[in-house]
Length: 222
Image (cartoon, rainbow, N blue to C red; front, side, top):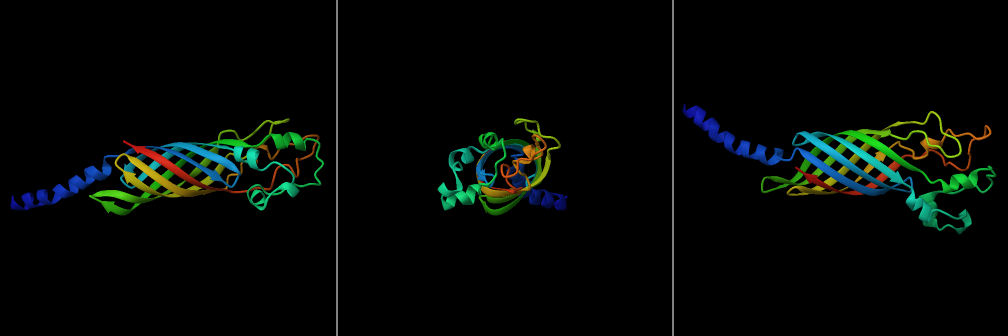
């Protein structure tokens, strides 16, 4: 009997800790940032945590090259060094008939992102996590793998890997985060196989490029 009482007393702080760390199993996160596709990126994601430090995530990610439209127009000779770093260079010798049409059709994308989320607490205050490192390993699933410009693309790629790491500050039910993500996603894959008059748009669609993103995020936990 004494042994049972001692064990019960020992479990009291443990049960209190479990209630603190497991009370938030659901999370909705809004993320926005800029990426190396010269695009603005925004995502809404829902996460369910199977344990306090491991869960599954499903996000809906949208990209748009509005930054490209505002910043990357003009000839190479007129561009600053910063514009060249962000936007690349154009092939001035390309005389493809439909080049101007493609230049007006800046790219965008809509992607689903399933992932596994792992959390590592770095700092605790008053029995709760205050600073946390998060790692999400998952996939980008392109919901529009084939675009239509003048002619519809065929055989567009739809599956990409995606890695995401970020630091979070937890304040009660809110979580503020900043981080970096990386993927082999290319925003021009959905139009890369378009041919007009058996001619590929060389010099109009740039070489394949991976996607790196810096972002800020706000999450609500419940």
